[in-house]
Image (cartoon, rainbow, N blue to C red; front, side, top):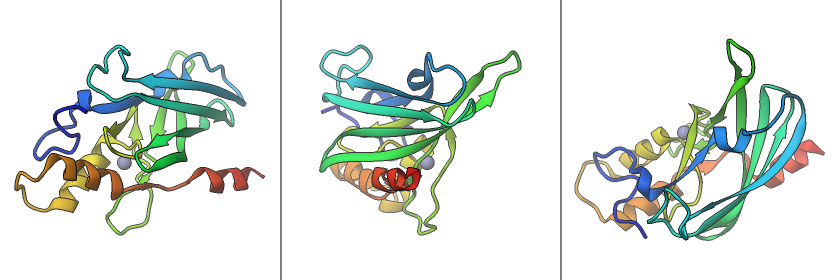
Length: 180
Ligand SMILES: [Zn+2]
């Protein structure tokens, strides 16, 4: 386990203690047009740039509906069992052709609105000990709303609250049903 949690009071996300999912990485080599692309990502266990993280293997399936719209299905073993959910992914056209892919944050923040965040993000973060990938903003806000004033609470509790307060808008079973 790493030292400092992602949701530490008054601190920005500490990247070394988060699994970081990059839109550029999962869309690398994906040509334009519809298609399904599968892969796997591995963190921890001596992988570069993640020396303090526990081992995490994430399988993904990117379903591109066209050149500018895709859904990324993520599947991995979360702290409380297997999780599988959908991250909407969009391609923004670049001036010289091609596109830059972004995730739309899949989490429904624990603010009572019931609406998915859908903030555009190059990267999504999963705090070590957490369950779902979400945007940086969601993580910080989730922590702040869960804990109120800054009181130096227990780092483990911070991580648990941050992980549990926000859930993905679309879990895999829903999505697969919609696809027919
Ligand atoms: Zn978010």
